[in-house]
Image 1: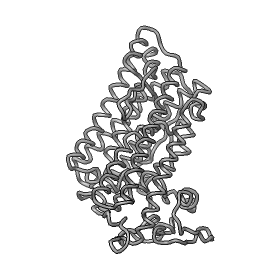
Image 2: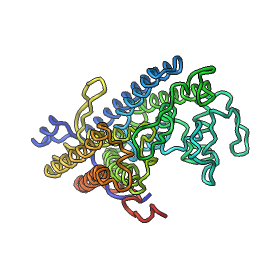
Image 3: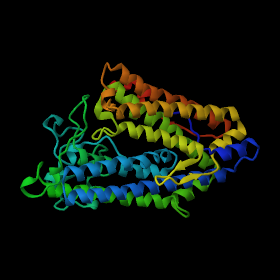
Image 4: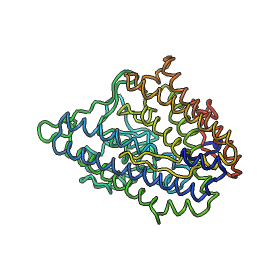
Length: 423
């Protein structure tokens, strides 16, 4: 991808007051707050994933509409803290290298389970697009016979995930679990999400979809992996953890990392790849949570993650606040007007993303907004896109004001070279 723009991060009210009075925090203080918030967010993600695992175990033990709906609700809840961690990508290599295990998308779901005939078959780009490992206890991969008679976390992570080096072969993480809970969304731009029946997990003659025991194995293994992967990342941000140590090693580089994460998520990733691209293609398959129709929430909490890193303040899922010295404090000490501008733009973006969220919750789902010719849907999505682009311009100015060099943001063809999207 092309690279563009630059980033910024952090503030709490009391620290802002201190900065205005001339008592600006040190960069080390700012980095410590940033790491503390990362630790809290990943711990919250882990707590939520464990609740999801409990709900999945209940579904497998007693498949019913009630247990399936409870597992779906736990999945949606688990996305809230996790999406707020995505601002730690791009600038922190340890997060970027790991992220594909837990949040890779889009995925060729036919790798995992049965799909509608309209889905098609294997392609030149991906011969495993309809492998359906749940139905096949043995298959060929790179000339080797793979024993998949038992679906284990190791089979998913070490063999299936990105099989044959193809990124669309997503076998692990939130979206694999999402597919197993909702199934394909066959509604196109119409109302409704995926509608997998609970009987896809029933044993014996009540089983639908075939291979219900193996489907349960897959769902259990994928959820176990998600929990273990999140536990590992939460540890990296604790005192003595590798992510915290790398961040604190060089203060200037650490501040640059915060800004890189903010700008790259704002611009290339969210405004471009996750929002503008899907609108250009009018493709519901390009929405981030396409099986569950939860995309409005993922976009909202991505934006909130950017804002709370800049403000240096995060509220944990149990209501406990985590806050401290912030990047906003550094900006106030350098250029108070620039900080005011940044906060106003972050608020405007959150208002635009909030409109998408509330409208979707009222019944106008994100995939419906993507339909060609739907002017209301386009206006809602472009409100978010434009807000994210606009705040990135101010993040770029903050990088300049703080005299940081070598900060580059991820770009997107949908924003930087739109013609290339259609070639």
